[in-house]
Image (tube, rainbow, N blue to C red; front, side, top):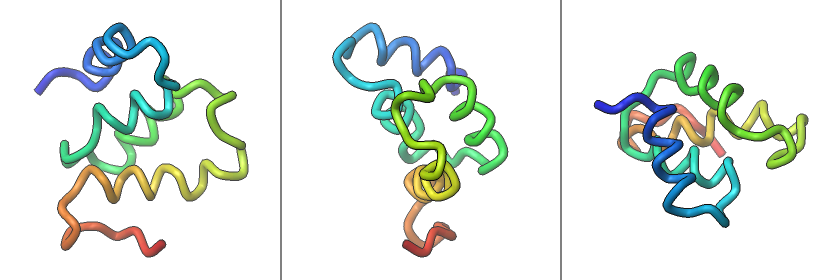
Length: 77
């Protein structure tokens, strides 16, 4: 599997008008990434202006739910 950062940069180049949040979410959907790894790359790649600081506590679990199959999701929205 390509690294998350490399895939993210490929998407950013192909879709320059997408926000970093949308690019990040698009590149991790269905990839079965652990929550700690997802949080690490979220903090590294997603621009702080793309979300409110107070939203981060539910954004990472929500994106994590998109990386897994629904029956494996632990997000209760």
